[in-house]
Image 1 (cartoon, rainbow, N blue to C red):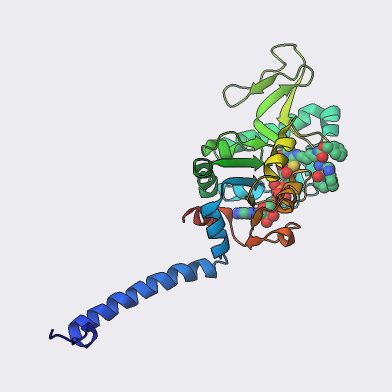
Image 2: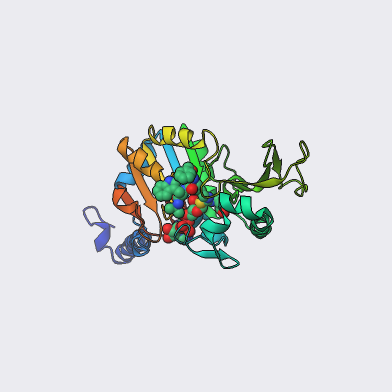
Length: 279
Ligand code: BV8
């Protein structure tokens, strides 16, 4: 190749150079196109805030466990989920008073169902975030324990956990992931009940206060896989937004929270959340 003759004019070399450039362009466009095509557009704004964030809060709902095979409640309380009973009927404080064995049947079924269920890429990605951000808070409405199974620690379980029972009188807790549930409280002999928050019941002492204080001080808040119909959990993103945090929703469908969010990523958590983290 003589001096002044650019590579493009030297036929074979030009041909090869053009091919390399073309392949590179295709790769780049395909990568970006696939994200766009799948509607999982992750904005530069979110990329920047994710890279710079110090205090991050994540709120999850049943949707994050959908790709693990856990049925969602689709629309909060008013769908029949068990023996023709609506969800907010079988999962209510009133039902514990009226028919505790029926409540146990419902939660025994769900616990046994959960036995073979594994976390999905969204759970694992979020578990990685606890190492990534100086101040990270994971708040979940889910009782399935999949965040912990994926390695998340200090999960704020607003609605309890299907693997725990507690005494209806002395409140002693019992971990059913280690051993079967005793017929009565080993300490005072009274009845045990599922250690979950049922409709009409207060959330665990301090849990919501802690979650809302973290929401009020975070700079980035993710709302993943919730229909945002059950309170007070659904109020957390609003607290974060009002305090100036950047709020991002991940859900294949719009929710009552979508208009409040700075960014809505329309997609499945198992596909979107790893992309958010992969930068
Ligand atoms: C209380 C444990 C004080 C048991 C649960 C204010 C206004 C209105 C009502 C109230 C209010 N304040 C209090 C109430 C009453 C009530 C309430 O909110 N009712 C609703 C139905 C209107 N709240 C309470 O009773 C709470 N206690 O407030 O105490 C008090 C007491 C009495 C009176 C006043 C005040 C206690 C509520 C907790 C109940 N227990 N769970 C159990 O699991 O059986 S709630 C349970 O349902 C879940 O924990 C969760 O919170 C909710 C289900 O919602 P989601 O998780 O969002 O799931 P859903 O299926 O609805 O949606 C799934 C979403 O995922 C969808 O958007 C879908 O598009 C999306 N999705 C699907 N696939 C994917 C996906 N997203 C991403 N990726 C995918 N692949």
